[in-house]
Structure formats: structure tokens, C-alpha cells
Amino acid sequence: MNTTYSAAGLGQTTVTTQCVSSFRRRCWVAFQKWSQRGRLQDELHNLSDRALLDIGVTRGEIEYHALNSPADTRGVRCRADKHV
Image: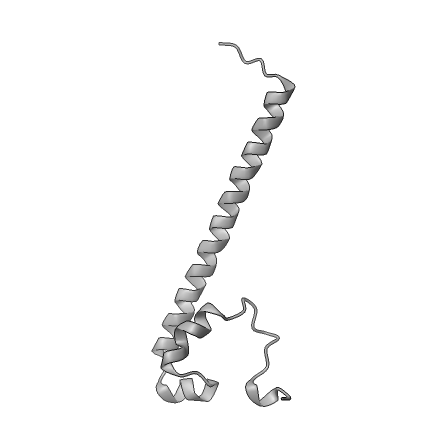
């Protein structure tokens, strides 16, 4: 078996490996976000109507908020704190 590689072939293999690695990383991040949205939807669906009212969300808005929620909500203020 011959294991001799040309410099051009080796460079092409490295680029291909990087592309595959990048694709797998993007897939993993997308899966994590999808999973996080599912957990958020489950948590919101398990809240009582009163608790949802307290945070300003109706049952019909749960999917919207789960899809459009920022990943890090520590900097988000409630509606009462916003100056309109």
C-alpha cells in the first residue's frame, strides 16, 4: 500500500475536514437551541394561567416567545421597567 501524499492533496483534505467539523458544530448548536426552545415551551405550558399573566404571556403566545426568546435573558427588563 502506498501512503505517499502530494502537498496539494493534503491541503484539500484539511479544508474538507474543517468544513465537516464546522458543519457538525453548527448542527450541534442548532440542536441545542431546538432542545432549549422545547424545554422553555414545556415550562411555560406547565405554568398556571395566573403565573403566565404575571409574566405578561398568554397561552397563545407561548410558541412565539419560545421561538423569539434571547439565549441570555439576564439583561432583559420587564415591561414595567421599559420607558416608552
